[in-house]
Length: 415
Image (cartoon, rainbow, N blue to C red; front, side):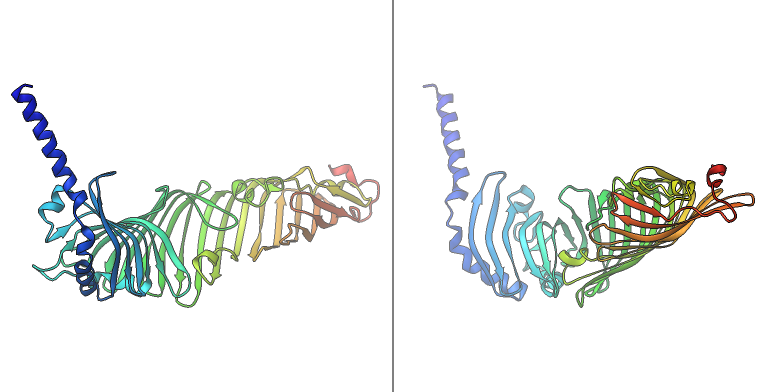
């Protein structure tokens, strides 16, 4: 065997031995010292399940099942073994990861003060990675959240960035005295709830404190139209979200199709809406929404809803689904409350043809209401009071017969 080959084998064996050393260290022997140091630093009784080192997927030290008395717990704390962390091991650690953590709200808000390092004695955490973090509130919880927390040298928060699982939405928070400035950005983002409206773009900003969030600016693109508004989220006594939203030229068809792909409307809508959500927790917040909407839809059609045909006959009739009604404008008030829909003060205008009335849709999607349709041409005026029934997907329009003052068989001559 050549001398070079012997040297290479010796170096390889030495490298393997050095690489194996971290795996052979009895880390649990240092667990008690670590628990005491962490307890003193965080002012909470800390226990660590076990400690181990691994090379996969990269060199890192793992602390498993870390508990902070009754204040919370972390499934795993990962400390990456990088050159930067090795060179600054006694003074600073970067990119420490907290996975599957859950903290009480008061403990989470107090962490900046608890992590504040004593110069020359405590380790400064330059950044913390969050993976599936939950914050327990008095009612419900926020999370799971993932992101990065950046800290100043004195241990105070510099910036928090949180993203959702598919990275379509991002929330940034910066300290402002005892509050936080918030900026939220999202692309192709779907609102939670039964009617999952999709924002092509959404930007919000506001201020958060212990009791909730004041959202002073909402700017988004919703079905091709700019939408602006304000909102307030409060979680101090249950969860409550209230606010308002305005839009000027929204494509109404994709929004209405969330409720019914069959009976729907087309056109561009200008609307002013108020909304309110309430629940015992975040999980129940969007289950019982309340909306009030004043709207005007321009240059469109009602599909599967024909209120013109009953004007063509003086005889009683029942029109079951099908057809359409064209309009120049359709305006009214829309109220949604716990699955019930009320369409009030409806006014449809299409030149010679006009209609007005009220309509209700119950939680089982059954229709009920009355509409008065009218067709006018010069001195000739035809009226038809209509009763609306059936279901949202299969409406039923009943007419007692069109009425033209002074006429009988001439009802259809102006069509």
